[in-house]
Image 1 (cartoon, helix red, strand yellow):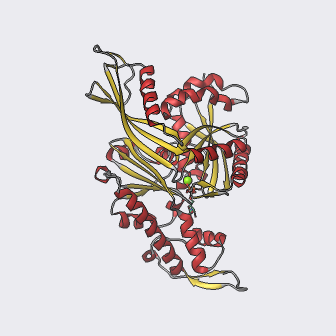
Image 2: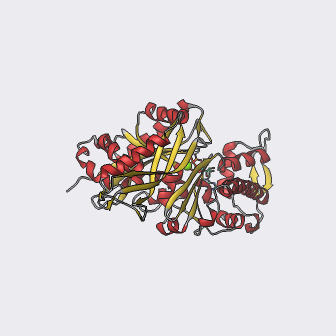
Image 3: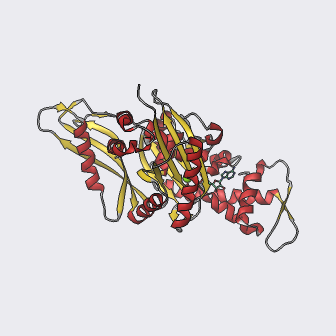
Length: 412
Ligand SMILES: Nc1ncnc2c1ncn2[C@@H]1O[C@H](COP(=O)(O)OP(=O)(O)OP(=O)(O)O)[C@@H](O)[C@H]1O
Ligand SMILES: [Mg+2]
């Protein structure tokens, strides 16, 4: 029997750095066997501003995950998020002469390589080359053409790139924290994998992962990814508004938001009085809860307006029939679903990570969409099964040495 596979994901966010260790059993099910989390320092809206602080935060998170899992973490899959991400949709084809032939894995790889060389541009690193659909002989759209007959293989691709300097900085902090980054995944893609259902992707859906510093957007139409973006708006803006309005520290504002925050003022049943400690005051000051909620609602509507503007420029909205799936830490705010429905004028549901076992009390919250998604991407890759021979001894994380090659075909 094959040995279980152990994989690690590190989600480097603006608010927190989460490390999850997953074990894929012989049935292909993902079990989370380790978890670590640290407060993120040195990142501003998806941009690394203080590398040494980020390194320390990564180390703290990884070390906790090592303790909880009992494994020494050497390699990990890491996320990329922030306004430095870009995407392109493109088409490419290969022809094989007049007679039809059986399409091989190598043909598909050659097509991917053709796209990679076309998409490559100066000062950018390619993060994903995702095949949306293949078309054989200008006729049949197929998901996996391997083994089928054809004389022309065409594919539509979604390509995600990251600005080279951001990518380089991220890679460097991960390496300097003692982790070998074996693969990078764009936030919107990872989150979409863990929270969206196939039916939603088929019907057309918008995923919004509203985190602390960034909002990651993914749009799927007819089951394929059409749009990925990471814009610099998020829950930290709400915290800053609360801190400014009530002249309290950022930490106090964050605590106030999490403890008493609600998205809709109308939903407030009782206008309680809350005690706060403004800067320069020796004694506590009373504020009305309605003032707090008013601040939250106003900023949320502002964030939604920024998102709406982005969405309106996509030309994809008429192909979206399953509404919006809202995830990320901000999706925890009570009544945010209702506020979003009113603002976006469409159905909204809150997305939480699915399809995993273990640590569910910890991970069944929207803020873990990205970390669980990264592990799920690996779980769903049948190529992982090929790499079991590397999964030997205590050094099972070296699984990646060869896996990187095989996983390429999925990510690229
Ligand atoms: N229960 C809660 N109530 C209100 N806000 C919350 C709650 N839980 C988390 N948040 C907010 O969610 C944000 C953090 O979300 P998340 O953990 O998804 O961000 P991140 O992944 O670290 O950052 P990013 O993806 O933006 O780089 C913070 O602004 C935090 O205040
Ligand atoms: Mg995040």
